[in-house]
Amino acid sequence: MTDTPYVPPKVWQWNKENGGRFAAINRPIAGATHDKELPVGKHPFQLYSLATPNGVKATLMFEELLAAGHTGAEYDAWIINIGEGDQFSSGFVAINPNSKIPALLDRSGPEPIRVFESGAILMHLAEKFGAFLPTGGKARAECLSWLMWQMGSAPFIGGGFGHFYAYAPIKIEYAIDRYSMETKRLCSVLDQRLGEARYLAGDDYTIADMAAWPWFSALMGGGAYEDAYDFLALAEYTQIKRWCDEIGARPAAKRGRMVNRAQGKPESQLRERHDASDFELRTQDKLEPAGE
Image 1 (cartoon, rainbow, N blue to C red):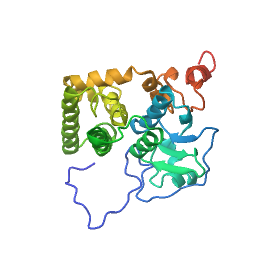
Image 2 (tube, helix red, strand yellow):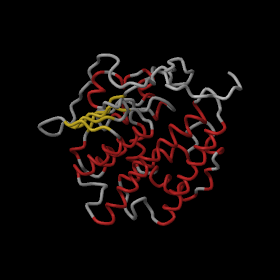
Image 3 (cartoon, one colour):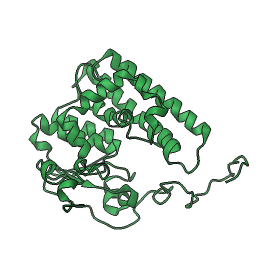
């Protein structure tokens, strides 16, 4: 470590040993690192994911569709361990060239359709089942605007604030201040909107809420980025808390948050989901040997 100011070189070069928490899986090139086919279950939809905020968007949507009576939305959810580089397998890259979770294979039609990026998955499923997305006019425009707002906002919260505050090997005041300011600005935008309307798009719960809720509920619940709840003074955003609590009380949201989860209390982890009964029979506390 040195106090000498960093001067960028004329041409940047990749330093594999950068010391960061994710150094083992971050790289500046795309493509597969190893050959491995993805498993395929019996249901029309095959989801490959992990219960990060982006991953929860997809499982929340599936559980909400099933709760609403759309039986055709049955799905298999396979866990992708991004810490071990599962997202760089040849099978995963074939579905998502960007090697990010979640990735979806829609096998409900005559030809499999790949869908990647969490917002695209939400839109694909909403349009397929005619649910949680207004069909036209002002309501649809409002819903899609807030969906895209969330998609554009997440990198500032996760890769920006979360990275430099909680994960970076050194604390950089400028970076933490920059992304703390932006995260609080985004919270202010959301809080003001939710002071005007029950949900992001208005009176109805939509995919815009499903996209934003996993990110902001993690912040408001105090489980994200060490002590970020106190550091960012998030208690002041009372409308966000009201909205987070309301969605969090939905049974489908509780189930969606459990799927592909690999941390936390054993009873909160359903690492793979292949049937609705798995929530009762196959959570980690049910699978662990007695006494462990």
